[in-house]
Length: 78
Image (cartoon, helix red, strand yellow):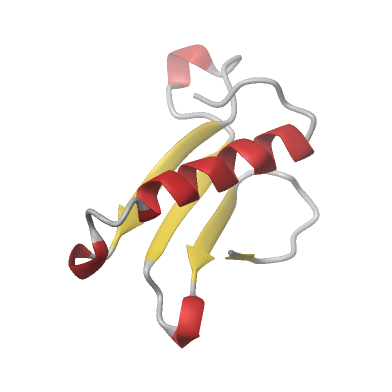
């Protein structure tokens, strides 16, 4: 999983690139609902290329998002 280096923890975008091909992405965002800015981080932009859907790559991306959330000291992922 790859991500850019930045000073702030969020937003953060991740790209899965095994064998030099992008196979999936997701983002951790500060907020997704203007009315509920107290709820963060949000997982967004979860995408797996169509040829690889059904291989549970989405589950690996979600597991990675949960680990990243915990590593940032946050308890919930919305």
